[in-house]
Length: 404
Image (tube, rainbow, N blue to C red; front, side, top):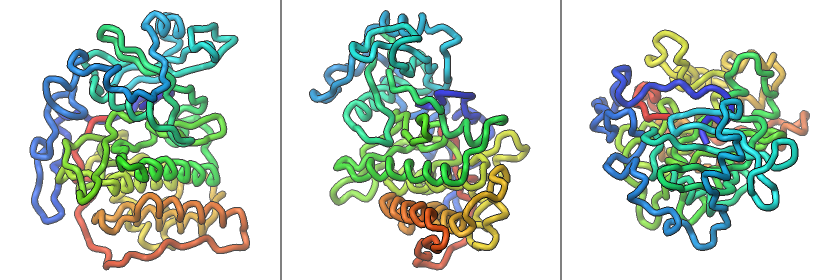
């Protein structure tokens, strides 16, 4: 869903001159065009004339027959949002705008704010970053998949050139707001680890499906939080079915968000579930440090991202405490922090073959959080690398912008 509450993430665009070249682990470089990114600001995903065309792909024929989504009229959604009034605007991104709305809990028709169910309504901009194909991808995935850690899609509107999606409303907004917005009460260590477990469960579910679904754009603004900080993954516009059978990867245009995309995906366009594992490692690192993957408010932020800065500390357990979020005030399990840092380091391995599967990450995190409830016990330490840790060029500096 992108940012459903709070400011959009600051990202350079594909046409920016600020992108570093994509470094190849073998020493070569890869230009932005070579890696599959076009130069248009309108391109976040697949290029081509139909990327932002609303007329080339039908909606009803593309939905699974078993879908229970409601087809809303534009008039119904105008009524639900009071004609998309600005005071109901709760988020904005490249795709368009997100509005707070109210519908009848039984009929799903428009209703008064003081009496019925609250929903979030995403309204796609014509010619926005996230075109019709991405809108349709989100509609198809969330229309067919149900899991406690995926945001619930209630319905859609495809009237004329208007494209809208209607979701359950998430009262706490995005993880991005709670980690990085000034003036917001910092989330506790226990809550951060619970959030990490929720993210891992959502990704593990996607990777366990027959289609081996790859989320492809994991970042704090796409991680929504319910009233009790339960995690819901949102914004499936860039999700793709992963490799099946004898295939080891799928080849696709490089899209996503700079700082979170796996280095081998940026360099080659080869996408695997381990690409999501790397992104998860970045988010876990953000939970530990309270710092953004790329701090664009800091001069020279493109030269060194969070991963490059933190890795020397992650590799030595006694140094982990130097990078922990100071807003925690030292109120966290020291051994738990070391174990979480070791998990993050494995997820961020330059070589995707040595990253654990999300199911393994989930098991380690669940064991960590379970042990944390028994202070006298020693939290588990993830298994060490099975190969000598190689020295590689910067993972973050090798990424090109992949629009957010």
